[in-house]
Amino acid sequence: MRWFWIDRFDEFVRGKRATAIKNVSLAEEHLHDHFPGAALMPNSLVVEGMAQTAGLLVAEAIDYNRRVVLAKVAAAEFHFDAVPGDTLVFKAEVLDLKASGSLTKVTSTVGDRLQGEAELFFAHLEPGEGVPKLFEPPELLQWLDQMHIYDVGRDEAGQPLVRPDW
Amino acid sequence: MASRDEIFDKVKGALVEALGVDEDEVSPSATMVGDLGAESIDFLDIVFRLEKAFGIKIQRGELFPEDVLSSTEFVTNGKVNEAGLNELKTRMPFIDLAKFEANPSVQNFPNTLTVEDMVRYVESKLAA
Image 1 (tube, each protein chain N blue to C red):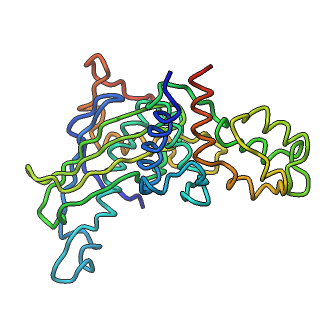
Image 2 (spheres, each protein chain N blue to C red; image 1 turned 135 degrees about the vertical axis):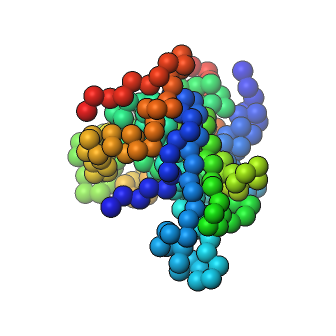
Image 3 (cartoon, chains in turn cyan, red; image 1 turned 180 degrees about the vertical axis):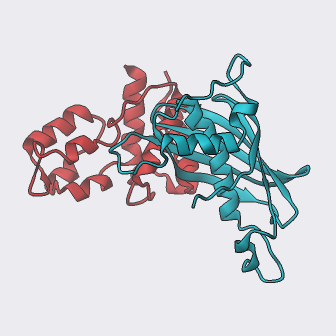
């Protein structure tokens, strides 16, 4: 089983920015215990959704050639809790991108209210740097398709992203 | 060319952001790992911030010589040997190794690098 903490991308501009949404639903089992009668989405999982948004953005920008790992939540602040029925909109922006890592800024909003903001730092590891293979290519492609990355994705020149031939 | 004080202020800013420490904790003599709590991944973050703040390029291993500390050529029985110390001196002339040399155990190295060393490092990069 994979942890999917975003439902789809609405915008994806190679190496620059991306917008993804996450619908919070009482059908998610973890909310039943967190907390009984007063369900709210843990902000640690909001960070995971932010990291999936920004992580796929930088992984695509380096052609998925390295393993992109959330290395550090450099700063994070939350202003209120997301509850069932809310749609979280994650907006990720690449602040700096190098071969070895990337620094991103992600906000989470519900409607026009800022729910949270974080600076996320990713390490880009090569095979042998202590992280097992995260995905088989067909499995990754299936996820990218599910996220609609190649439906909404554009490259730097505004042209549709080329879907990898895996 | 930036003055030593200007460099220190920018290095301090980078460390405050990267390590979440208070400004007054970042004194010149503070050690990066022991006093400021830097972990290995923080060094990657710090490299990013220094490159941006000063417009310099920092090669992997320049600030934390993992390859020397894990090399059988430079480490004997858990201690950095003479060849290793020479390599560190050549590679990291900005570090004051006097204390480390007294007991050059590999595990002592992370506590060697100070904020002042970082400032000297940036100074040397800017002068290059």
